Length: 235
Image 1 (cartoon, rainbow, N blue to C red):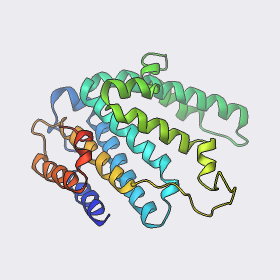
Image 2 (image 1 turned 90 degrees about the vertical axis):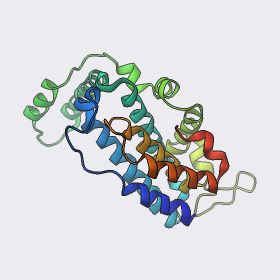
Image 3 (image 1 turned 90 degrees about the horizontal axis):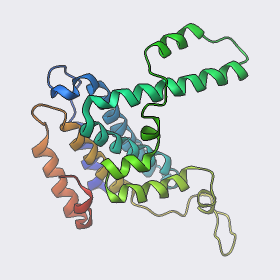
């Protein structure tokens, strides 16, 4: 386990700050999006390690789902470049409208309508690309790996209020209640593999992809720790 933790820490030291001019042309308009998604991946992987160390493995699934979604999103961005801007603006506008409508119905205090107007003025709030953005299964099939969708379904069942999320805290046969989750999954390996994939995808947006030697070394360490992960890592 310490080996996986060390690899996560090593990968977190790789990314530099966002530097204009280092990116391939089709990624320049969305480089800040890629950087934000990579940072979310890095910090989420770190949070998974923290929860694991504190004995909260059963509470990791929502974070693991977040990490998986952002890795697939990075691969989507790498595949389409700045074409990702339109569906992102569309969804942002659509969700802002929904939030504003909810505030108007339920907010007990005042809120800044002018600020919302500024947000909506900078977005495209039609349905262009909305289904594509929201349907994770569709994105995973196009830009992810086969096991991503399987993992996603399992993580959704653990993240939402379902039978699966409840049964982790009691024995189905004896009905004996438990204080901690009985789930048993190697979240450190999960976090390490998905952070590797996030960094590999992010490196593709640069004119000269960075960290390739370091990432290859991380990959070899991962395969040494568990040969089965070879098929899960991006080449």
